[in-house]
Length: 236
Length: 236
Image 1 (cartoon, each protein chain N blue to C red):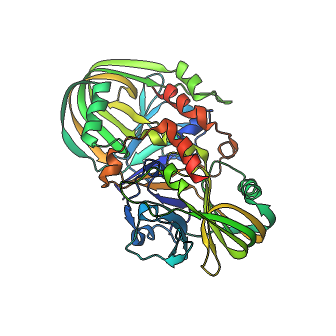
Image 2 (cartoon, each protein chain N blue to C red; image 1 turned 180 degrees about the vertical axis):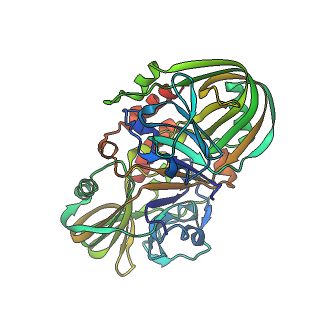
Image 3 (cartoon, rainbow over the protein chains, first blue to last red; image 1 turned 45 degrees about the horizontal axis):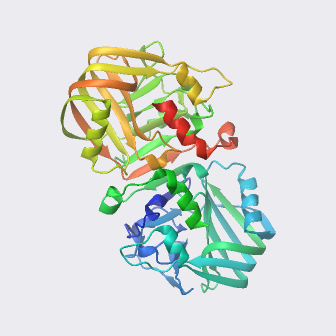
């Protein structure tokens, strides 16, 4: 159980031109970590992985537990060994990101970020399941559903990734939310944190696992130059 | 012994602003593979790793075996399990790269490349050891020494890396050479292959290991936008 490693199945660049086919089963993904985030085949909703349980927030805003045979085109997991770095109070998303970077004391390592807290506002989104032939990632964003909750308790889970690796990862912060009752969540677009505890885990290793037998991926011509701009647009 | 994984210590982006301090011992590097390429502290020469033996070609053109306590700022290793994909004849570097990509049938996976062959021409370089405060990577290139050999037998070892990961890796081909008698080698700038056998090994996983305790690395501000251009300039 390697707690120094962030594992990723798929590369974010794959999603940009619309390679949304699932290429790794949940049961295989969970062999590389017990905590994380991701999405299902067809970009169907937002995953939050806690204690080896995988929760999907779908575009109706409903939360369900995902089965071991379902597949992801893209997910990050790690073995949780995070440490509390103290209490947070009265922060919005941008103040939170600044605080995390101050606590990490570097922008150049991958890190897991977790908050157990109460949020006065939580604003999330979930992508609708797409139909093949799949559209591009930026096109899916226009059809996403957004959710707002007030005075909600729950878990923020996600990662900080250095900008340098933007072809592989969602650069900067990639944060998902699941409320304590498993009724609300998704990809975080904004929040107001009332108070919570911040946990961080820095990684020495980033392991990128690519779908070696997915023909569409193998044949795709990626335009590296425009990719990073497209990724930033779709993820924020 | 994972033969599906390419392991890398350090990120190529570190070298661009001049972070040349060794951050991993050879003995630790060799715990992640028995074959590869790299450089030593201060960018001192070019490494070729074969059968867990590490050879350095220095800027005088001399070859020596490197000790287990010496350190690398940047290196790639893997466990060799490559397969012969046939004989090659009468190719220059650019024809060779085209042939490898045709045989790989994808530009989107990391792969190890090896040729055992006879070269009518081999043109290499080795970087001079730098002195702190270190210059930038592009500045070191202006002081590199170049070597030419004719009718030389030896081993070409290196990697193909997808363009997408240019912040982490040397994008495209990164090839080193060591002649059969261990008298000549270096970072390949060009060649004319008479005949040889090509071996390839595709990887499902790319594992990036970062120096978590190197303060200069942790504090460095990377300019992602200009980095890829600088990397291409310095490596070719």
